[in-house]
Length: 368
Image 1 (tube, rainbow, N blue to C red):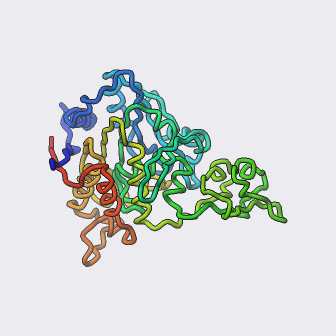
Image 2: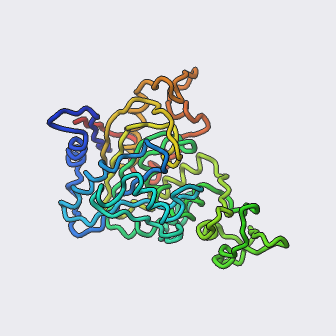
Image 3: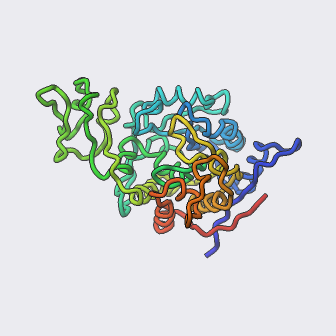
């Protein structure tokens, strides 16, 4: 079987060719021009960064991709879905404020920004996949309405999945709030009684009549009736309804792979990953630690598994940055992501993604 092609260029720049020009040359060489964008709605999935975190991708990179797609006649937009945790990207209004604050506005990127799962994270498309762990993925509707899907990923470490690359950007990132809960939790949501204001929004929006008030007029969930749809999380404005976050990391990784499959199957796709400012944790944090390795470069491929594998290999070939979370050597550990988060197992996502036909871990790296 022929190996997948992954294209690479470093961050070295000259007066004749800056980094953004190198990015355009990279994605052209990798074949993005072979996609027919004419009059097609094209989603570029990107993480806008939690305010306070400074390692997210600069919007300048996205403009390179946007401009190229527009030149080819595409109707392009940048998109992400709301978060499950409490922060400044939990609903579309705050999420857009955060995106604009971090530079993701039409003046900087050349296109509009869309929060794909709507105001409260409940606007979703149900995609049947019949996977080992997920039977029906819950994806932000605008992601599935697009004709073409492009991922633009900041490659970094992650405290639950080992690293956050293309598969996580696509799988976890495109899940609606209920989808994210399905990936993170094996159980159902719970009520934080102290935060409950007795507003009744969760009760009104529960189709299963699983939520009721107790004697103190605080909401409670009957897990015998609850189906785990996550609607109550989306409608609570007081962060009183929370997921369990009780899924094992290996199963979380497998679910991410299956969600990525739901997003990508049956339509044109292309993937770009930048190994820069490789923080040990996700860009969902409102802070970023020292990069764990030196900046490596930019990667592009049609294969989401191969591009993640190439990025992992590239990071693990680098020395640890002094003063970073992995600067102190641990005997027997030669994997930077395992060193940063020993309880994680990033290989489980890659292996499952390959098993279900998302791509191949075997790749040819073509350097420009």
